Structures are given as structure tokens and as C-alpha cells.
Length: 463
Image 1 (cartoon, one colour):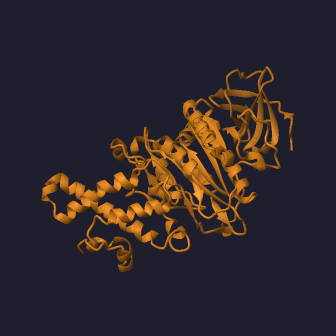
Image 2 (tube, rainbow, N blue to C red):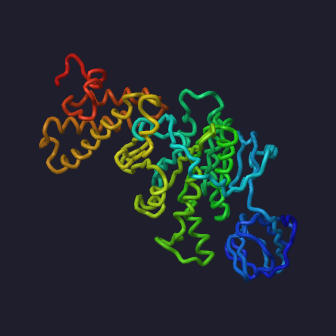
Image 3 (cartoon, helix red, strand yellow):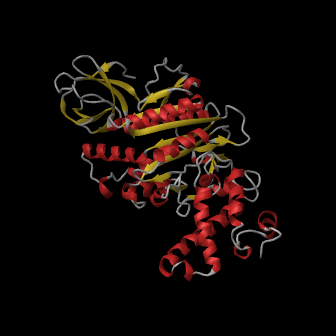
């Protein structure tokens, strides 16, 4: 430890949030520092790059007022840490873990490194058990399970913030005891109005009682943006693996995180890769997403729901592209659905939950849940195909069965996708069965005879 030790150094330049120094002391990468200006004001920072001759300090606050001659650096001799304890729930922090809710400091039971604990891959268990979000297109069609990482791909101007709030307010564990569920919500690079809205919604709904809220503003340093999700995940790991809770982490907006990563990388003078992002962005994102999961012998679990906006609605952009490689599926918001006043505008066709099969069906949700979801997906895919065909030959040029699928697509969007209030899984399934009754029984190839007899057949409807 070298706490409270100052170094005699020569500052060579200040560029944005970065302070460049000639190296005169033995320090480590990612070590926490305090940058002290001529007035004695301290700013938090960390060592971001090292060489034999120089070192680079990322200043986590504004560098306004720093000058090269009168700036001192105090080396802490340890990485950045976050104080954790049972009193985390109900508190509001900024992007670097400082309390901003006018309350007392957190009564800490320990200090945790924000870069995460090392987890032996052999200690991980397969994520199972259904998490009910109250959103039909997620619960019924692309189910979220404990320990999964399932991103939401949105676009600029789409209501992903509303959806994030809705999920935060509605998410629950089925058949779980009170106090087993906790939420960690981190807003990354958002405007003051959006951050204030997140906070007010949490407080007014009572959700804040079992939530840890981190707010990183767009006006904050880009280097803070890189640390906000790490502080949030450190709190989540404590709640999950020490307090034994099932934790859902909502991170919005990961695109702002990646843009900050590109900005800081450019300041370091690193060689850019695709669209100017650093070549290590994949591994950097993996250090965040791979902190989700459940472990053998641990009662809790950590589930992630990262939200990102696709630049120009391009799902092949490096940010959603790399995120899709690391995570287990995606929920995609659609601009055309949003224009028709469908909320939430979830396009179920490109959506995917790779772990849905492990947390649904008999013993988890309902024995007929997977088959219902598969049949609804197949029917809606055919309806979308019929829309394309109808745009060429007209509705009158379609066969009668094709027209039924065309109508099914509209009903599916208006009655199942569109919703304003929370729905239980049973309510979503009831709507799904009702929609399938509008189609000929002979077209329901994904259902068994038993399911058709139980849910679809009516005495007066034709085969």
C-alpha cells in the first residue's frame, strides 16, 4: 500500500480527461489515484496506461482548473474499490459510486474491486428458472431466465427508456419468497431529465426499496462512463453472491458506454478498428457481460438486461454485433411498429432467447408454454410473408387461408404485442390461445392433438 504518498513527477500534457506524466514511481495498471489541483481539490482517477518512461492517468472528473505546474498525484496503491453492505438497497449513486441521494454514507461491510471477482468457469451453473417481466413479447415469446444476459436492441427515439422503467417496475420472481429479488439499475450517459425521470419513477412506484440506482449523466466525464457499469455490477455481485438475492441488472444505454470507449481510446492514440472503435471492444464488453450468471453452491444469481441504441438502426453495427456474440439472444425494437402506435414496439421475428428452453415448460412455467410460443412465432412469420405478397397481388389475390394469416398478423400486434399494463404469463398465454383460434386447425402444425382439443377446438368451428 502507498496510500497518501505523493509522487514527484513532470506532467507533460492534459488532453481531455487524460493526464500524461513522466514515470518516476513504481505503480500498477488500473491503480486508483487522486489528482490534486493548486487549490487542494482532489479528483478521482486511475492509471490507464504504463510504459518505462511515462504513465497515463484517466481523470474521472472534469480536468478544468488543472495546470501542469501545480498538479499533484496521490497514489493509493490499490485498484478502484466500492463500499458494499446490506444498506445498498434503496440508495442512489453517481457513476463512480458516490452517494447522491442526500443520505448518509453506506454502512460498508467490505470493499470490492470494481473490475469484478474472478470466477472459475467450472463453478458456473446453467441458467434456469423463469423471470417474469410483465411484458408479453418477452415472457411468452423470448423468456428471460435467471443468470442470463439478454440485451434489448433499440434505436434513437424509440421508447427503450419507457420499457426499461416498465421492466424495473414489473419484474418479479414467480413463487419466490419476499426479499429474494433485487434490482440494480444503471443509467449511462443520459440527460439530466432522463436521469431524474428514472429516479422519480423508482421512488413513486416503491421499486427503489429493493433497487440500487446508479446515474451517470451525459455531462460527466467520458472516463466515468466507462466505470459506471463496473460499479453497478460490483454492487450486483455482492447482492447476488454474498447476500443470496436474485439480482436483475438493467444497463441503459450501452451505446453511450461504447462511444466513451472510442473517445478515450482515441485520446490514448490507439489504432482504431471498425468505425473507429478500438479493436479490444469485444473483450472489454465481455468483461461486463460475463459477470452475469449463477454459481454452484450460491443461492443468488445475477441476470443482465443491457439496453443499447443501434446507430442508424443498423443491427450489423459493431456495438449490437459484438453484443450479440457475447450474450444469449436479443430483444429488438422496431421503428415501423412504433409509428403505428404499438407499445412496446417489439418485433418478435429477429428476437431470440437462447436459454428460453432451459427456463420454460413443465416444472418452470407451463407445460404448453414452449409449443404455444413456437406456434405463435410460425404463424406471425407467415403473416409477415403474406403482407409482402399482398403488397404485390393485393388482398383479393390471396387465398382465403392466406387472408386469415394476414388478419392474424394485425391482431397479433394489436392484442399481444401492444400493451400498457403488466400481464402475468397466464394472461399472455390466454391471449395467445385466443389469437390462434382465428386460424384453421389444419394450419396449427406446432401444436399436438391434445393441445388443439384443449385450447383451440370449439363445437361450432370448422376443421
